[in-house]
Length: 80
Image 1 (tube, rainbow, N blue to C red):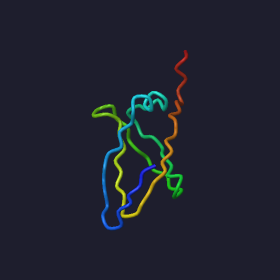
Image 2 (image 1 turned 180 degrees about the vertical axis):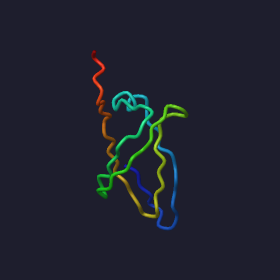
Image 3 (image 1 turned 90 degrees about the horizontal axis):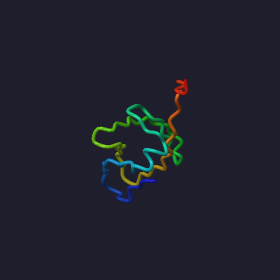
Image 4 (image 1 turned 30 degrees about the horizontal axis):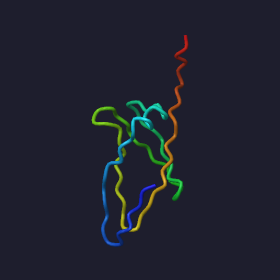
């Protein structure tokens, strides 16, 4: 959950993922689906190891997001 409680100014920042989150969600250098549970919008983020995995966020005045990151799903069977 991220919120901007300022009623006049927008703010932008990078939300960095922890190593535990990267392992748990099996983040790779690819697109990942995120859902904003507060507003019902879907968004796609690009995760990259270079510079660390992060999500760029811009919040308008009095705006909030409750983001849910979807786990990666592999469509290729690697157990052969």
